[in-house]
Length: 476
Figure 1 (tube, rainbow, N blue to C red):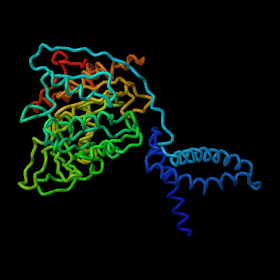
Figure 2 (figure 1 turned 135 degrees about the horizontal axis):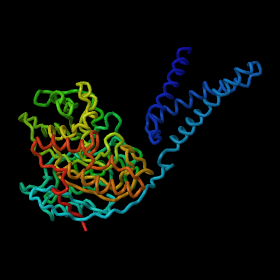
Figure 3 (figure 1 turned 90 degrees about the vertical axis):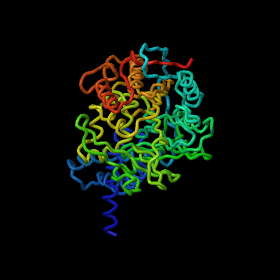
Figure 4 (figure 1 turned 120 degrees about the vertical axis):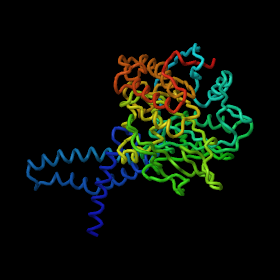
């Protein structure tokens, strides 16, 4: 009995420390299952040990000075107890009964068409006044079609999505509330894919690596119905092969390629440290819910003849547009931090996140799998300079826009200059240098975007950061 009581004393104390550490400055994390369990254990610990301690303070046998000191300590414990009891009650009540405020700022931006004089310009397609639940994605696909970029590949045409393709929809799952990709947008995108004119017979995987802190089953999501998680989106297409895969669960496991006889799920470490960007390239190999083995770099593994079908694997890169406290802006390029294993690259001496400022995500894109299309979620954005990447409901600004391009550099440049900066300025912020794609100072967003561009160009992909080499088409 003595050992059990001592074990609970230590376990309960550790639960409190874990709760405080894991919650940090983000109260919404109190809804996580591990946090609820910690809160319940912590509450019981405080009741068992703290309450008797506080009551003992009133003993007449206790010296005055000691009583005062213990009174202050008891007051502190009482406050902590109040937090835990409140949290535990909130957890018991359930988030479906106590809905958080989802109110943010609404802002209407105006976009204009722009025609480049360059014959090799990058195309950017923009749809305004959408919320993800409407016809926004259909309008985007129609807009692309009218200007020579077909979303659907039919009869070996040059379109993007074929009826038998295996598609990874790369989302942002590291943050809940408005910090993650809009689930309504992803649902509409999947609907568009399965509505392929020739009938869709392929497979779709919603995936991301939140670097061991992500989730595809959040309680609070970026959606009109905030309970709609990525997992629920995947489950809403029962007639098709649609699933999720959280690469967080394999981010620390190093594996070899399928061709080397390794069929385990994990991350491939591809080479050594890149001399310019400092990145060690890593990428996931994994089996989907439907038994398909995917190498993010090499394609769909065909076990029958031990080869890769690279042409069937397509990546749709769907980030949410927002500010970033360290790197200024996170959009299409920065979004590839959710492809790498930060842990394994760090063990090799080339921590991925540190490489961003040197163009490392351009290296990752160029040396693994370049996105077939980038669709930027700017329905709700974080327009507070230096405030992201986590974004609460109250901190978000609704601009109601989505934009797409096969050129991630051009898309990020245009979106930062025409969405993030105007929204931040309208909110009253004066210093917009961290969001400015024309800011070329060392460490700035504009600087590392161009360094990423250099890496991608070396792999012979067409990308640009020159406004004069961009066509902008806006759905009317």
